[in-house]
Length: 215
View 1 (cartoon, rainbow, N blue to C red):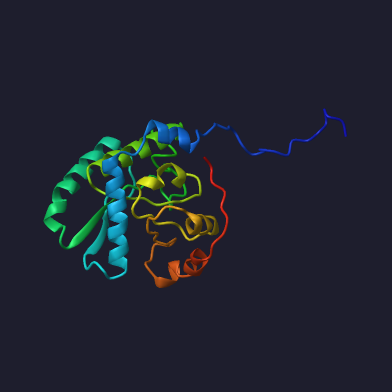
View 2: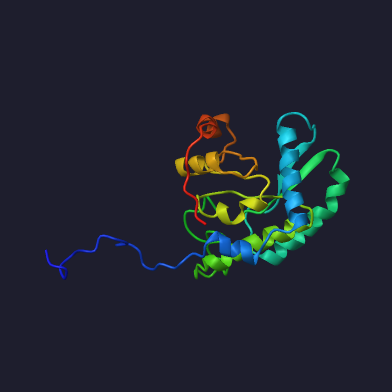
């Protein structure tokens, strides 16, 4: 077979490829300050104590299903942070800051994938917006939760996450089982809150294994 007649076997169904900037670039652009780090670390420790019965408060993860407007999200965060002192003896409040839509089969996929809501899919812009928003909210003293749907996006945001639900699929299970950060993980993939939804993932997460990280 000559070079001219060599068939194409790579990216045969790909319309366009855009380069995704590495996480280290985003970290340099949006570094974690002392206040944000203290907020995340403190919330992770508090969640650990709650789950192990050492803290009798209720963990409350509350907020929008998915972020579509950063300014509106900041306004919501300020109002939520204002109410936190009223309930601090009974509740540990963590704000939902979800950037992806796991159950959407068609339509908008979330702020990271399409930050301008116009099918332009400026993912690098979405990553910057997501990390910048997480930084602002944590700087307020309000810890954040988000949902991880793949093995790439957490590497841009996970150092600012206190609670991280993940879907019950093998790549996510493998990734979370090896993730070096100390946030707590909620397993789930279906809409009904049954024990069987996440229980198959628990023994998997107990095992140690190697994982490839993109830096």
